[in-house]
View 1 (cartoon, rainbow, N blue to C red):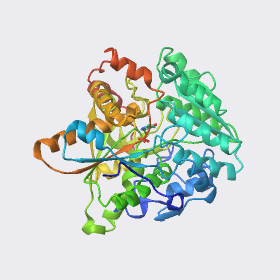
View 2 (cartoon, rainbow, N blue to C red; view 1 turned 180 degrees about the vertical axis):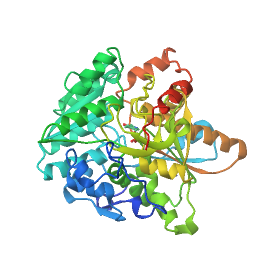
View 3 (cartoon, rainbow, N blue to C red; view 1 turned 120 degrees about the vertical axis):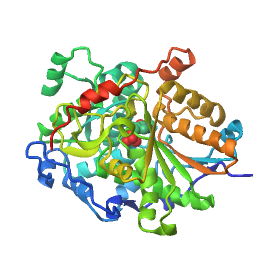
View 4 (cartoon, rainbow, N blue to C red; view 1 turned 90 degrees about the horizontal axis):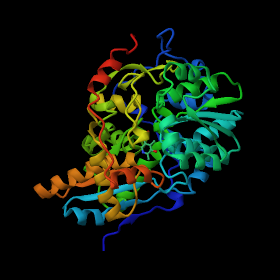
Length: 454
Ligand SMILES: *Cc1c(COP(=O)(O)O)cnc(C)c1O
């Protein structure tokens, strides 16, 4: 009998994170100070981040030690299982082998605590008492509320208005862990009040919520800000996923040919694939790398329709300028059921690797994505987060292609989280009321025309 679940012992939990900055053939373009357009200095960031995280952000050390306190908490749910999706393979009648890493086992239900825990740990060590953040679908706010509770810090979450209205149970989850949640834009910050006057009926966006959380942290000495994706140190912390996987694929005596992941800011997929890309960059196995495919929503097509350019991370233009794929910092995507993928920008690291040809990208509409989520739930059981369902759709399409050609490819996707709080979205799909937003090309063109000059 083929094993369906490959687990590791607690003592095989990685002791170090992998930093792909050490292996890049050419360095990242530096983040720029939005005022001077000069590369930012660690001091520029110290109003909102602890120095330990700023160092990780800029580090080119290949391996960075995971603190024992963090490893200790990771073992609540890590190492996470690697599944062979045998029942999905049978349902599709494909000769392809399908594997997925399942991050839905964490208490908040996604990969996000992999970075929320260390970010909170370093802030606690620096004497910070409160952490502010934004959340889209509510997964990141949940993860940070959970993490701050474990270290006895306070947590303030600015939640994108449409998610606040659509997903009340995520708010309850955050409040259960002690987080304080405001719908964004809110009256709590100057930029929030300004946005509410300009656009009283806005559904909000991650870009707006980031502006609020950054302003809150920058104007309070005892508070810092935490970002759930995009930044280099977040990608770093998430590599615990890929490092575990490499051991698990060894146990399975195979290795992936094609790797799929959903990409919002890029962190779960970067975590899964950076250790593989790094090995290829260092020349292991003659430098062979699996094919790596990012999956995103057609209505927020950052990698497939955006430009690779310097842009702000937020709407109010408070963050440093990052060189990344972007749809423009004031792009407001339609209110689709994939909150975690509704971000205008992307990780500078993942963007560069895409631009340099190590990774490719595809985009899908939500109705086809949910059709695949149902196929998955009805074979493998788990209800996937709408975000995760994007890459499952890609895997299913590839597995069906393999059926045509008879290829026994090994396919992988990163199971970034469960959809137990996304039942309203499943309900929409099941009842036939889910629709696909129109073509975003014009809106994208419009917002891209307003990119800052560098
Ligand atoms: C937040 C989230 C994502 C998107 O964020 P990345 O940084 O791209 O990983 C994807 N899936 C789930 C379940 C999420 O919560």
